[in-house]
Length: 143
Picture 1 (cartoon, rainbow, N blue to C red):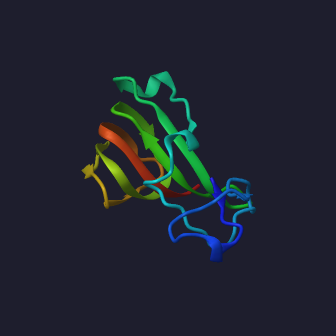
Picture 2 (tube, one colour):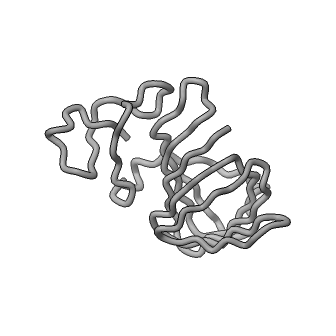
């Protein structure tokens, strides 16, 4: 994913190739990414630990759009295909762009998420994600 080189030449809600967003400190102060329109082939495969897979054959892909110089703040796009996986969470705020999932938090609530939902997960939460439809989210993680 890249940032617009000439913001006045861009259509609102789009980004074009010029400056990479993923290198720490290299992202512009402000940028726009059309998350639903980001092609699947622009996302990078993020292999799951087989121990995390409870059922199905889920595939995780994503794209880091910005990372703070100290690596403690990360913003990006993340996607997972249907299946059931476990995870231990970081402090995260995300908005579901497409798809649906049920997130069961050990000792906590069961969260039903779908398009337009904003969700907050706490560092250390142990979760089980049941992904009903390929889920894509835009996220901010604080480590």
